Amino acid sequence: MELWFTEFYKGEGMDLQGTGLTVKVKNAVSAKTPFQEILLLDTVDYGKMLVLDGAIQTTEKDEFIYHEMIVHPALFTLGRRPERVLVIGGGDGGTVREILKHDPEKVDMVEIDKEVVEFAKRELPTISCALNDERVNLIFADGREFIRGKEEVYDVIIVDCSDPIGPSKVLYEKGFYEDARRALKEGGIFVTQSESPFAQKRVHGKVVDELKKVFPIVRPYLAFIPTYPSGMWSFTIGSVKADPLAVEKEKLKESYIKFVEEKGELKYYNPDIHYGAFAIPNFVYREE
Ligand code: SAM
Image (tube, rainbow, N blue to C red; front, side, top):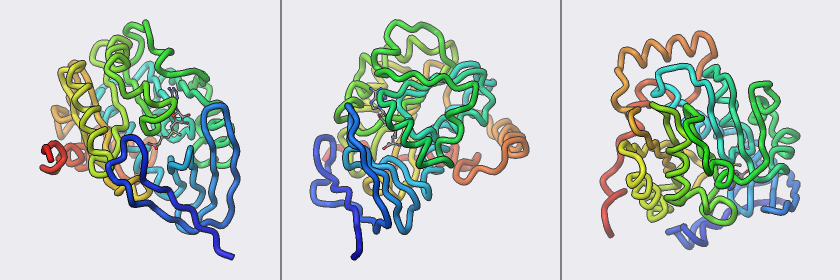
C-alpha cells in the first residue's frame, strides 16, 4: 500500500484555493498539542518533514534555503558581531543554528509550543542541533506578549512564524512591528518571513505595507523553497538605519570569505544572492 500526504492550499490568507503539494510518505507520527496538530512524515523525496495544522513547515532536504535566508541577509547587513538576537517562533531550531554561526553572545528563542521543540529535538536532529547550545535561552511563551515593553535590547529580531492563522496571527500586526522596533538597539534589524508573493499575495503585500508604516527602510526579498506554496517565498527586513542594499560589495565579500573559512560553506546564501534576492518581479505589487 502506498501512503501519500497532500497539503491543500486553502483557507485564510491563501489566494490559491484549488492547489496542493503531494509527497510520498514512508512513515508518519502525529501528536496534538494545546496549540496545534504536529505531524512528522518520513518522505521519499524530502527526508523528514514537519507539518503543523496541515501546513508543511520544514523538510530535511530544503530547510537550508529557508533557514539561511531568514538569517544571513540581516546578519551580514548588521556589520558587527551581534550581542543579542531574538527569534520568535522557529521551534524546529534551524534559524538558531544559522544565527550561532555569527557568534552572538546570546540568542533568546520565544516559541509558543514547547512540544514542537521537543518533537524537533527528537526527530529532526540535523535541524534542531543548536537548541542545546549554552548561548541559547529557550522561552516558551507568546512572542507577541514577550516583546511588549522591551526597549533597545536586541541587535536583530527574527520572526520565524507560521501562516497568519492561529497563534501566529498576532505576529502580522502593526502593533507587533511597533513593539519590535522599540526592542531593537540602534542600528538593529527586524526580519520576518512574509509568505509567498504568488500564493499569498495579499498577505505578503500587507506585511510590507504595515512594516512601511513602522520602519523607514523596508526591503522584501525572495528565495526559492520547493515545499512552500508555489515555491516562491519571501522575507522582509525592516530597519531604521541598516539597509541590506547599502552594504558595500567588497566589504560583504571579505566578511563572507572569512565566515566560510571559519564556519564552513553555506548552501544557498552568498554575496550575489545577498543583492539579487532583493530584485522583485513586477507583478508582486501590481493591483489586479
Ligand atoms: N518555517 C516555517 C514556515 O514558514 O512555515 C515556520 C516554522 S516554525 C516551526 C513556526 C513556529 O512558530 C511554530 O513552531 C509555532 O508554534 C510558532 N509560533 C506560532 N505563533 C507563535 C507566537 N505567537 N509566539 C511564538 N511562537 C509562535
